[in-house]
Amino acid sequence: MKKIMNILMLCAVLVAFTSCKDEVDDVFDQTASERIDAALKSYNEILKSAPNGWIMYYYGATTYGGYNVLVKFHDDATATVANERIARANGGELAFPTERSHYKLVQSSGVVLSFDEYNRVFHYYSDPLNPDGIGTAGTGFDGDLEFRVISASNELIELSGKKTNRRIYMVPMPIDMPWDTYLNKIKAIESDMACANVVVTINKTDSIATTTNSPYRRFTFTLVDDNGIVTTKSAPYIVTLDGYKFYTSVDLKGKKVEQFNYVPSSVTYPEASDNTVELNCIIPPINKQLVSSVWYFKGDGMSDSSYALWRAYNEAGVKQFPTYGYLRDVAIGQYSSYGNIPANFGLTAHTQYYQHFRFEYELIDDDKIRIPIVSTFAGLNGAYFLQYLGSTLAPCIGLFTELHYTPSNGKIVATGGTKVGEPHTFTLETDYLKAPTYIKMTRDDGEVFIVTPTVNSYPFGQGN
Image (cartoon, rainbow, N blue to C red):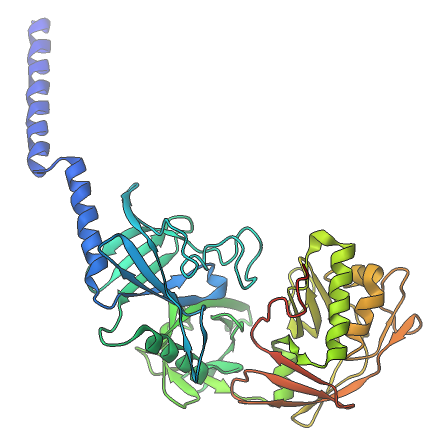
C-alpha cells in the first residue's frame, strides 16, 4: 500500500510540473535572446527618434552639480555630442564644438547604453584626469560613460550610471532650436540668476541660510530646529530653460523643493510648485563678497613683475618637489577645510597639495579692504612649503600683506624672522555687483590684480 501511495504522489508531482512548464512556455512567444534583441532594437529606435537630439541632464560627482550635454543618435551607430563646459568665443556669444563617435546598446543585466569610442566632448566628465583640473587625478569629474536604461519613451529616457548609479535623465531638444542657441540661453539664464549671496525664504519671513558653493552648481542649506540643533542639506542642481532644477527634491522645513523658476532680471525666484518658497538674492558690498567667497587669480590679470614672482615660485616648487606638480591655481578668499580648521579668509596656492595662509583684514566703506599682516597660520601645508620654498613663496604672499616667517622652520610668527611686503589697502571694482564675473583689486601703490569666481587652471605655466 505504501508503494502504491508513493507512486501516486510521484505521478501527481510530474503532472503538476508538466502543467507549470506548459503555463510558463505560454507566457512568451519569443525566446529569451529574441526578446533581448527586440528590446535593444526598441531602445535604439527611441534614441534615434528625437529629430534634434536629446538634452542629457548629466551629473558626475554631485559635488559639482549637473550640466547640459546634447546628444544626437544616428543610424550608423554614432552619436554627435555638445557639452556646455566646452566652448569657444564666437563674437558676442559662445560656440560649442561637437564631436561624433560610436555608441552601442548591449545586454548586461539589462540594457546598457555605452559611449564606447573616445569622445573628447562627452568623456570630459569621465576622464580620470579632467582637462580643467576638476577633481583629483584618477577620478576627475567622476562621471559615467556607460548607463543602464531604466525606462525609455519618446518623451523621457531615464538612465543610471553603471559605475556610480547616479540617475541621468534625457528629454528631447526643442525641434527648431540650434544647439548653440540653446546652450547660450543656458549660460544667459545662469548669469542672470547668479548671485553671490542667496537666502531661501518661506512665506517671505522664515529665512534659511543658503550658500552657493561657487563655482559649482550646488546649494547648501543651513537649518536650525526648535531646539537650536543645526543641520545642513546639500542640493546639487542643473540649469535648464526653466531655472535651477535639483538633482533630487530637498525638504526644507516641510516644504518639498524641486526647482526655482527663472524670472528675467529679478532677484526673487519662486519654487516651481509652491510659490510660498522663494530663492532671494542678497547683494552685499563688493568687499564683503571678496572675503566670503573664493576668487581665483588670472596670470594675465597682474603686472609682469607680480607674475614673475608667482612664476618663480612655481618653477622652484617643481624643481624641489617634482612629484607635487605645478601650481594648478591660486586663490584669495574663504577656505573651509576639513578637520578642525574653521573657515577663514586668506591666500591659497594649490599644487597636488593646498598651502593656505590666513589673512587678517579690515573692511573700509563698501569697496576697500586693508590686509595688515599674516598673523595666524591656518594649516594645510603652508608652514611646510614656507620652510622649503620660503625664498620664492614669501614674496608672493608679500604682494598682499606683511609677512614674518622664520626660514629655518617655516613657521609664521608675529615678530622677528624675515619681513616681506607691507600692509596694503586695496580698492575693489567689478562688472556686476549681483554676480561679479571678476574683481579688480587695485593696491594703494597702483598695482592691479584680477580675480574671478571661476578656476583658472595653471595660471602661471606648466613648464616643459
